[in-house]
Image (cartoon, rainbow over all chains, first blue to last red; front, top):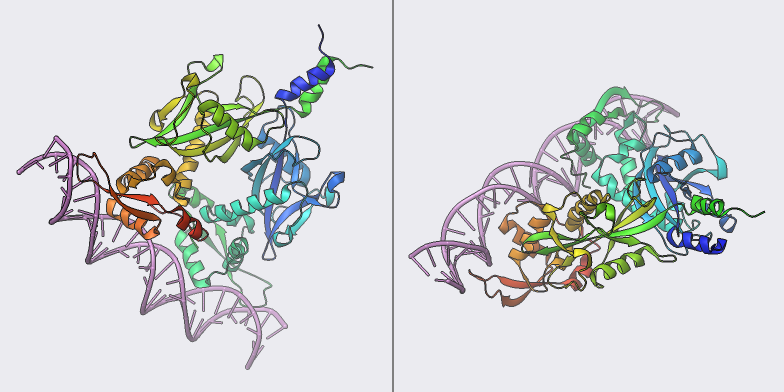
Length: 235
Length: 235
DNA sequence: GCAAAAGTGTTGGAAATACACCCATGT
DNA sequence: ACATGGGTGTATTTCCAACACTTTTGC
């Protein structure tokens, strides 16, 4: 006895009852502000709203691989580390049906990672102005933002947001922007010099309308050596 | 023109290309040891191995609701807070095909949460002896264990593992068991008294073969008041 | 009285904070 | 010369870690 197509369909859906997607929350830093990459939603229902960089997984595609694929497809970026943050699965989160999404998050250096694709009005938004995103992306964004604030105090992720050569002022602006607090300049310097991850490259800023600051690079090698014992940055 | 059933099937699978499951990692504390609940795997392939408490999501079931349902089905427990930890989606993680699982984690008080179901040889295992679990459950377990060690220093979760009335010795044994380190008794006491979340209930231990210790309760109300400012416990 | 764990304070060192003045550059 | 941010040191406080002896109970 043959089953109907509907019966087969519902049987499959009963097990494969869900579609999976990935959303990427890409933070960047520019002009002393923390930014995030958004696009105009693909969906009619949300046409006037901004959304995160997301897409459905392909069959036989690893989740992490999908995250990197989606990021590359949407932005052209392919040299960014993504970190899984959380899964979101509210039944009503997606108008097309049951879609569970897994959020990935990263921090990048805006100047050093040029966007190569600008579809759907892709561009950087100041995090302060992000509101009313499509789907449940506001919630996802906020979860990722909080995670970022925590992570940035546990790992020196901040450096990835800056140019290779940066001044201490830029570094401090960055931490102040991410954490939303003011820090004492002298103590900030002391702390970072004490960490011993900054390499003095013997260059100074140019084109600044004041005394130029010295430029530094982050010593990734030394960090890798020491990070076993690393317990974070306390502000 | 009618499509074949196979064509329909593969078309649906291309979108609904994945099944979702939840696995629960339930930690408990008993006899000064940290324990975790495991069952014998349902699957033939893993029949001799232990596994976490998991199951597939039903159609139209919220992920978190599924986690609570699965926990209740497997153990009878229905008064436990579950926290999402991470999603695991290696393509080869499940022999039945593409199954992405979302891990949930909790800490409970073994004495105060009696198991009501013992199917599949459900019982508590000492975390030190957990190895070679079914599927990728070893990895999931270890991720959750590390998360627990971190969380327990950020929130006073430990109290939920103890009886309502507990001695400082029990509290300290608990932290030592979870973190896997020895702590100085005097400093430990100082730290917890300074937090001011312990209520002296003016009772003492009984049936101990030595000087009985004073018993305390955890002041949940005071903690709720102060937790905005709470930045964790440092050992 | 002996075993076993409870209870209790002090001290030294490390790290965090608070704080003010001179310097180098562009305009 | 002046405006702007760069660069620097010290004193104080706070927090943490290390550490030993007396007390209470059960046996």
